[in-house]
Image (cartoon, rainbow, N blue to C red; front, top):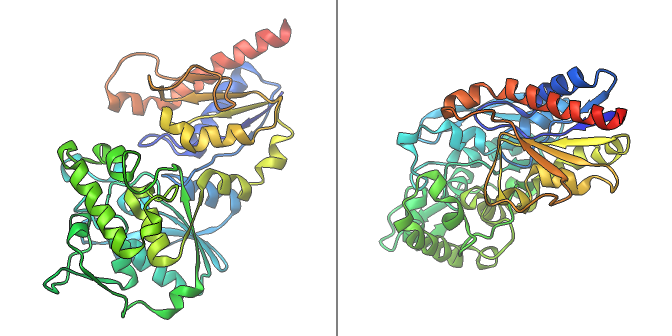
Length: 372
């Protein structure tokens, strides 16, 4: 049996590579004669850069940029010649922002624009940007400021480029934006297809998990819509524009970016279509599988690319109640790894052992089927 293991990372716990290795460990204990192809993946969210950098052999670098609270921070990126890759979560990822500091309207994303300009100055001509897993909801105004845009209110006072300023913008200046930015192609890797505004938009769907009070949803959503009526009205209903708290919209409007499926791009780069042909079984996974997974995240993206006749199983940290009954999205069955009720910290600590045990148990079932 040849098993292709293609999981996403388990946020705040294990990288995609660590998840893949733990699953191989468990399956090997039950199926010692099996062969494996480890293919850790990312869909534009946290861990995408690590998965691709490792698999493609790109070199990782750092650049000093403005951090989420205005402080200088080291921002990682990967590069291969004139191509580069970075992910928003490395600057303003939800997992890296302490709970007491989570305010998606105050977090700065200026550093993302600063990094793009630095890469462009250094000769990079194509940039892949993963925009999943963010703690901000600023519609990309911070990114734009990092590129050189300036924003002013009705009194011509310069505004701080954060989410709470969106509804105050009356004028925009592009005088400080360098001309060489137009020479750079930007692909925006998204893990969701949500539009910028409305009931499925960035604020209403994702604002709560970032710390935004529900009472503010309508007001903030309207401010985002008003801002883009001024900037780029066509982006408001664009599929995927709501990714990253509207960062995808910002990259389109201010940097000429193109929204693409993060998982499709990742699988293309990793030659998935050729590698999957050899598989007898494909195993996918992520930390928490829910209905949002079906909108374009890694497990379903992998499953839909898997040829008919090759079964796909999901092994996840947890399965949410909003999931439909399996099979769904070409995944035949899904298995949570949590063995017992415990604190979240303990569950995250035990993820590797829980993965190994679950894979071993599934392997034992596969062995029973084979011997039968």
